[in-house]
Length: 294
Image (cartoon, rainbow, N blue to C red; front, side):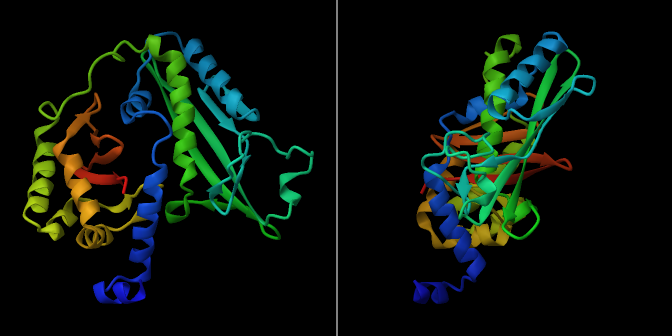
């Protein structure tokens, strides 16, 4: 492996990202389709505020029993809850995320494990019939003998997004009867903005011609890979150049179904459980996320 690494000229960071990209591809989905997740994030609920807020509050309570709600501001902010993971890897027997102690009553902070992860969720009910719900999460790390450290950017744990999306989906499933457009099909590739199609076609053509470097200008400065790992456009290009299978799958996603959300600010291209996301940033369509199963 060392000889290969030197031969292709990859530095340690790029090599690490390739490893994480491949490993992460085996634990991508949380049992829900990408369409469901996108529907949950973009749903608008035509009902009264109390119905939306109380449903969100009830759902939060089921997962995170310690929180502060403010109906006037439409916010629900949880306390920091321990997450049953060690060194960032989920424990196989973890079922109760919200308990502050283990089954023997001993505090999680005083076990023989030196690192502990915590999560805090914030839910906002916004709008005014239709209402919409946003769910965001934060993570922190506590190490014995030190103070808790917020985990952001490259240090953001891979499990955070899945937990946030799970809560968003639970709220959505309880409220979707109030979302009048829930049964509407998403806009297809033929209906998404022409400016976005220009970008998608340009990337498609570059891959077809083997000119991988040409896609770099369409990539976000900080691209999210499978498990919330982030990398640079240059590193994505290098990964595509050295891994034929990743490049093939990447190209296949673009050739498949692409859909836009209703306000045309996000486009998701999907092929089974593989996914590529584009966001409209400063009036330009930028590729911001890549999820590929190796």
